[in-house]
Image (cartoon, rainbow, N blue to C red; front, side, top):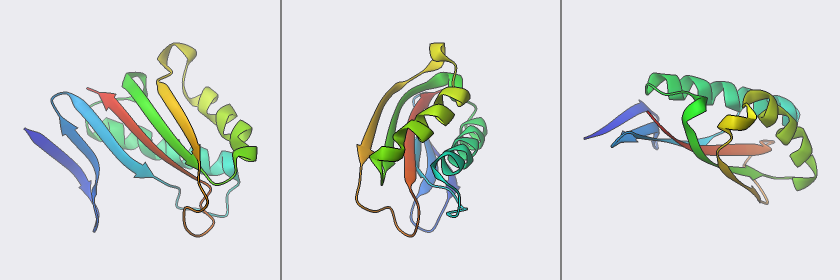
Amino acid sequence: MTIRHLRTPIMHRVVERNGMIFVGGTTCDDESLDMAGQTREILTKIDSYLAQAGSDKSKLLSATIFVTDLGKKPDMDAVWKEWLPAEALPTRATVGVADLGGTTMIEIVVTAHI
C-alpha cells in the first residue's frame, strides 16, 4: 500500500511504500537567509517530514541537493555535517542548477526507510 503525507496543490511532500520514504524537493520559506540558514531551515523541515512518516534522519539512504551557487557548497556542507553524524551519512549528490525560483539557493530531496 502507498501512503501519502502532506498534500500540496501539486504533490505530496512525503510518499511511503514498502518501508521506503520518499521526500520531495524541499526548499526554505525564508529566502532572505544565506546558504547556511536556508540549509538549516530545510533540514528542520526534513526532520519533521520524516517523523510524520515514522522515520528519522538516521534512516536516510540517499540525498540529492540542488544548489544555485556551487561556490557556497562549503557553507551547506558545514550545516549538513552538523545535522548528521558521520555514521549516518547517506549517499549524496550535489548538483549545480541555474535557478530554483526567487532567491532560493538550495533544494533537497531525500529517501529514507522506516
